[in-house]
Every structure is written in structure tokens, then in C-alpha cells.
Length: 257
Image (cartoon, rainbow, N blue to C red; front, top):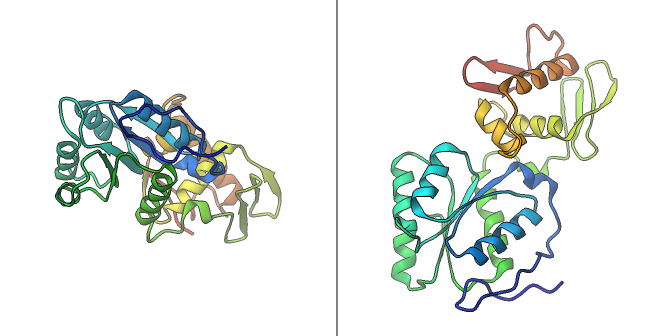
């Protein structure tokens, strides 16, 4: 299906699906859309979900701040002209609070002065309305890749080996410490990929629940504990003294190869 050329202008646009392919690996990435124009917000949400991203919406400045403070995101698409509190103020506030989520501003204001102000206050990119959908999707990809700099991109990880163990992410299989192959669930593979992607870093239980399970289905933290115990049985030489999958009391989990 041919994409409409531009979105976000004065005329209402029909909803079209992106012709970009669905990327399974994108399901670990969470994007916040802050846009008060309902049709535009719906179009953005639909197309980003077709790309595999998890998407959360907010429609005004205070709601956006609440989302930023209570959830973790890999990218925010932030309209400048919002009710109650504009996007520039939202960006400035979260930056002062130490939130480093990449921000892509959307705005009908297209002057160089407006762009400079958005970037000066902490934005990472600035796209004017009306905009080309393909361009927006490419900018989203680039911002997330920039955020992932220093790590191998999640989308690039197909196979991973550590010790005698091997994980094949594409077909949801592993080879354990004894050379035995097992099939894992999608959630197990997503959790493995997240921990390996963040190698050497502690990933909080809250972030794991958000990125692997999402907010529609939100299990107890005990569910994560059970998954980690299963990983230790598969991969650790001694599951009682883990070498690869570590629990950090009261915080979360860490993978070290």
C-alpha cells in the first residue's frame, strides 16, 4: 500500500499502514507519543506498533510528565504545542530531573529559531509538520541506534554464545551447558536478549516488567525470579554460585559473560 506523503498538516489524513516490515526485535523498545491531535496520535501509534515497538500515549504536558516519572522509555515523540504545559517545558523539566530519554520534537513551528530552542532545551531531533512518515520512522530508528551506542543493537543479535552455551534468538532455541537443545518461550528469549544487550549493567525489575511484559499484562516480580532460576539451571556450571546471571538484591539482575 502506498504511503501518504505527509502527515500533521491542517487537513485531516486517512489512516494508512506503514509498508515497512515488522521487526520482532523492536518489541523490546518502548516509545512515548505525546500528541493532543487524536488522529495524528492514532496514526503514529498504529505505524510504530506495525514496526514492532511498544507504544504509550499521552495527550497533554502534565500527563507526559507523569508517564516519564513512572515508566521507562527508549524514545519520546513530543509535540511542542500541548495543552496545559507545552512540549518545550516538558523536555526542560525531565532533563532537570535527570531523565535522558531521547526526544524527537514535532512542531508546526519551522523557523530556525524554533528548532534551535528545542535542541537547546534538551531535544535530540526536531521534525516540522506536515512531515513524511518514512522520514519520521527513519529518525526514530536513528535516535534509538544512537541511544544504543556502546552496545550491540538488539536488532543485530541473532546468535550469542558464552561458555559452552549457545542462544539462537530467531528460532527461540538454546543449547545448554551439557549440549542439550531446548525450546524457550518468547518471554524467556526477550528477557535473555534484554540482559545480554545490557551486558555488565544491572537491569531493574521494573524495567524488565515494562519491556518484556508491558503494562497490559504485568506479572509479579517473582515471575522474573523463576525465569532467572531456569536460566541458571540451563547455563550455569553451578546454579547455586552463578557466574553469568546475577541477582542484585533489591534492584534487579545482571548478565556477565
